[in-house]
Length: 301
Image (tube, rainbow, N blue to C red; front, side):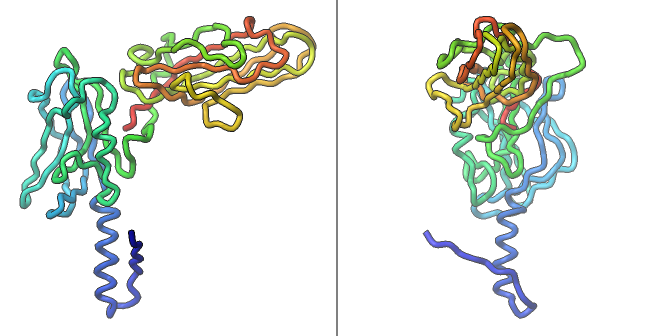
């Protein structure tokens, strides 16, 4: 594999270099650009105005959309993901809303994640069509989850944080005042999607943590808890597991320390996460309490 450097033109006599440089900029920027968005409008799939770069191998350029328009999911199978793609023939743009083969669960289809083309700067499930996003058609034929392919992002990223309504009294405690597991052990699987306002298929959640520490005796008391989307990779101080740590100096035994903070927790394909106790020093762990309240979620869009 050879690397090529295209230098910026120096003057007007640098025509060949100028041509190569401009073509490179178009490929890295214009053809990878995407500003239009899919969204749910009262149960109807709609696409916003914006731009989408396209490179189908022959035609290379940018699609401009100047008005909102609906896209029909009538031809999509119930209980299946659909791809929303654009193709170009001459100056005519065609929109395709079709089943993604084998994509019947609410996880983001592996075929879509693998379809990112780094040279074109976008997703191409079909080589001649630019993928704008995907949508799930529920078993009752209603429109479900929508995931947009954002400019400069691929679907392996968490995407945007969707905050849940903050100013109401809804109980969104995924963990509601229970003791953490003993040191070196995992909790049972904790479900976080399908309720709390978090859609099925969410990739991660933003949570508010309240930790009430119970010291066993006077002195330094420390408690460190980790979170994961599985219970097979054991956390450590040096791993990347989301972690909360509370360490205080207590004058005696009892409920003496508390911590409140927000972290992001990854979810597995079933919308679950696990809690792990990494450190518990001078702690009566059965008397500690942890609350995990969902405040937002990530869909990878």
